[in-house]
Length: 191
Image (cartoon, rainbow, N blue to C red; front, top):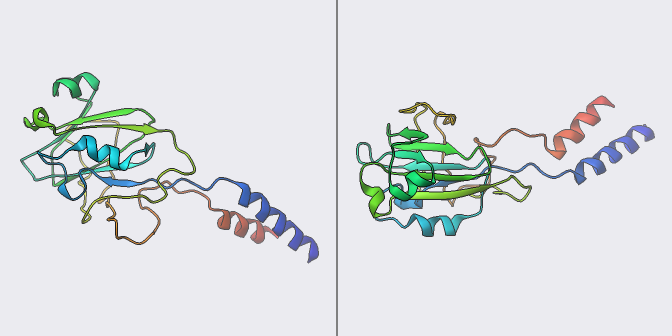
């Protein structure tokens, strides 16, 4: 019995030293103003950065009045969707995961890009301090799971953007990871 307790305590000490899993953050682009004309998205990015690989951007808009087009830097600067990487306009929201540590560029191709309806975010590599359940925005909204054009990013069905007042619950969009408690419980089960 003593040996089992010693092993359990040793396992707990080792697991406690492991970095905790980073939790992806969900950001409602434009906060309560959403993805609409006359919103300062540069200021919005400054307010919420840093962004990390694995985080989600949720674009909320009015059907038929806006779209979300992922473009390269040139398309962003010129408000040109000709070389779009992906395009989405169905429903009233679109969830996009930052799958790589890189720069991401989005525009609205309905003409509002020229007045500033465009977004540039830089996703950094994941770190144990990333996100921490950080989220932004107002009411949550569902995302449709289909896209107007094929892209390497798949949106989660009914992805939710958490509001600032939400309780600290595990993100539905975060990747599953073994927690220190789960690892200790697994070791204890082996004893």
